[in-house]
Image 1 (tube, rainbow, N blue to C red):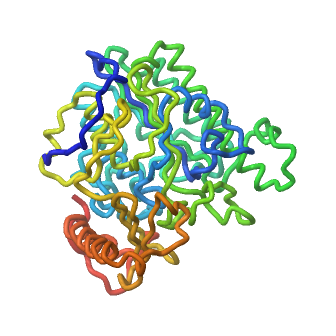
Image 2 (cartoon, rainbow, N blue to C red):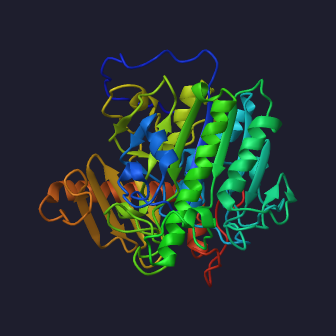
Image 3 (cartoon, one colour):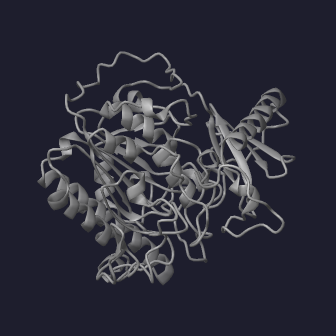
Length: 464
C-alpha cells in the first residue's frame, strides 16, 4: 500500500498515550444537514444542545467535507476511503438501480470485523438499488454483524416508518420518529446484542433532516416564534436528530464506554432546497451552493470528533478533511492491519495526528476531489491547498477560488492568477481521467437516477 507522507509535526505534548486495547468507533451521519445548521457552527435559531455540548468535548472540524454533494456517493467514500467515481457509487441510488457498492470494494466494517470487532449499522443505507435482495450485496455482505436499515428514506415519512429491514427481515410499521428509532436500535445493540468482550464499530445514519420530514410535536413546540410551518418542521427535525444523538452519548456514559470510544459526527452533503421557500430550510452558513452543487455549500458540512483524553477537547481544526479520510484514520487508531487493502488507490489520509496534536498540515497523495454529473450543476472540482478549481461537464468552462480569502467563492481568479490556473486545470483533467480509468463506468451508461441512457452498452467493472 502506498505510504502516506505527513508534514513535520510540532512536539506532541498534547497527546495522551494510546490505549493498549483498540478503541470502539462510532460514525454518526446526519442526512442533508447544512454547514450552518447547528448552534456550534453559528446557527442562532436551531436548537442543538447535545451536539453543541459534544463539540466542547472534542474537536470541531471547520473545513470538513463530504465526498459528494448527494447522499449515496458520500456514504460509499466513508466506508471505502475511495472517491465515489473510483468506488463506483457515483450518484444517488434509486430503487432497482443496478448501481451498488460492489463486493470487490474493501470496506471499513469488513476490515474491522475480520480484526475481531463487533459491527452494527442502524438507519439509512442507500448503497444499493436492490435493497434486501441477494442480487446485490447488503449491509451484512459489507462487514456488519447486525443491521437495521432502509434503502433510502424512511417511508411513508419519519413518523411511524414501515420500511425498515432488520438482518434481512422486514420489521413492519414502527411507532415513533425515525432518529429516535434508529438510535434506539443502536442503543439496544450496545446494551443487549453485541459481544461485550469485543471492541465495536457502529454506524448510525439518521434520515433527519432529509425531506420528506416529520417531527415530533414536542420539538416543533420549541419554535413558537416561527410563522412558517415548513421552517418550523425543518428546525424541529434537526432538534429531533440532536436529541437522539444525545441519547446515544448518554448510553455510552451509562455503559462506561465513552472514555474509549472514538465518535465522529458529520453529514452526507449540504442542505436541500433553496433555503427560503421550497422544502429544505437548512443553512449553509453563508457558503455558496447547496445540495447537488460542488460549490462549498453543497459539500462543506459539520464535523465533530470526540475521544476523551486522546484528542484535544474544546478545540477546532481548520485543516481541510474529507469523508474518505475516515478509513485510514480508524485503521490507525485501532491498529488494524491494512494489508488486505492491497495496492488499491485510496483517496483519504490518516487525520489522527491532526486530531491529537497541534499539527497544522497533512500531505495528501491524492487531492481533494469531487464529481457529480447531475444537471443543472454538473461539475468536477478539486482543492489543493487553499485553491479550488471547478469545471462543468464539457471541461471547457472553469472557475478558480482562493478559499482562505474567499470561502463564499465570489471572485473567480483564473485570469488574475493564470499560472496557477493553468497548472490546476491540467491537474484536474489528469486526475479525473485517472479515476475514470480505474472505476466502473456505470456513469457512461446510466443517468443519475439509475435509468439506462438510450443506445448505451454494458461496460467494465459493473457487478464485481
